[in-house]
Length: 233
Picture 1 (cartoon, rainbow, N blue to C red):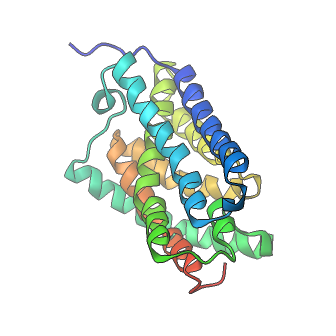
Picture 2: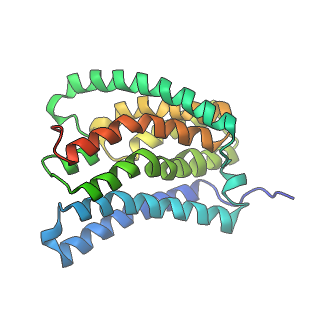
Picture 3: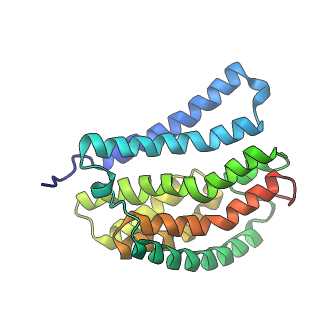
């Protein structure tokens, strides 16, 4: 018999704290033991990937120790309809966010960079780490972020008996704000809407993961081209 999971909003706060502390620890270790490596391709890749992956792994652990596992608690599935719904909302999102990014860039101008874009700006990377970063931004990062925001956070708010539209709204706002990029928060809100709608209308995490991956494809290509020096930041 499936029991109600024993984790709530505190679990999300704990996972987010793990994410922040992991990033801070990596930065502190690099500064203490390898200050000359700051800005190197290895540090960029590790600093970008590890905090998010660790936070996602802690999310999975929480559902195992305090609930029924990710398949039940986080609505983890990749059925055919999940992929179809994710592709639909992903392409809708790609169109909307491409337009929003154009408008946002025209307003913000030269400061219009994501955190990852700023890291690889004027920093030509070898092919291998550039490809690893591309795969992370396109495929792996969306899985990790969806586990945290449209999985753990979404489930925590549902447990508090919030309405489905309220859950959608708050998770979208927290998703945007928690990237800790104040200048891009409005753009991240637009990006998060179709991803959240995929989760809302499908009722499962697989759809929002696919939508997120579709939405991240062009930014991932841009990061790859900038990192290889093919395209200016």
